[in-house]
Image (cartoon, rainbow, N blue to C red; front, side, top):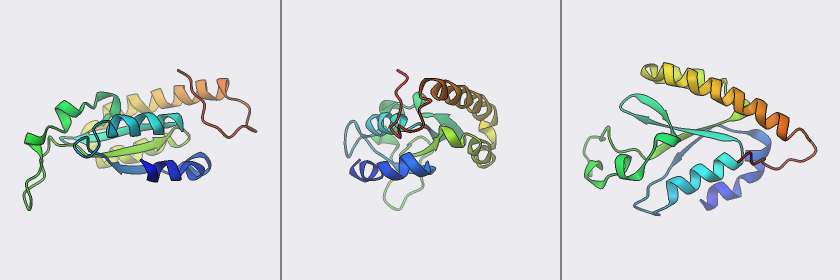
Length: 140
C-alpha cells in the first residue's frame, strides 16, 4: 500500500494502467483497501478468473483467495486463486477493449463495463469540472 501511496503524483498526472498483486493472507484488508484507494484516483479494477475478466466489485476474499486453492510450491497455478488485479483509469477506458483481446471470453462483460466507465467519466467531468484542482473527485 505504501508503494501506491508514493505514486499519487504519477496516478494524478499520468493515469498509468496498473497490475497490482494483493493477498488478504498477508494483510487482511489489503485487496479492498487497494480497490478503494485507486477508485479515489479514478481507477476501475478488474481481475481474471477462469479466463474471464471481471470487475473488482465481483471479488471476495472468501471465494477467490481461499487458501485451499493456493498454488503449491512448484505446483501449477490454480484457476480459482486470484491475487493479481488490473486497474485502468477512467481517462483510458478505451484500453479495456485491448485488454479484452487478451481475455476473449470476457468481451461481453468488458464492453458493458467500458460503457459504464464512459458514463462514469461523463458524470465525473460534470461534477469535477474545475481543471485547476488536480485532486481526485469523490462521487459517492
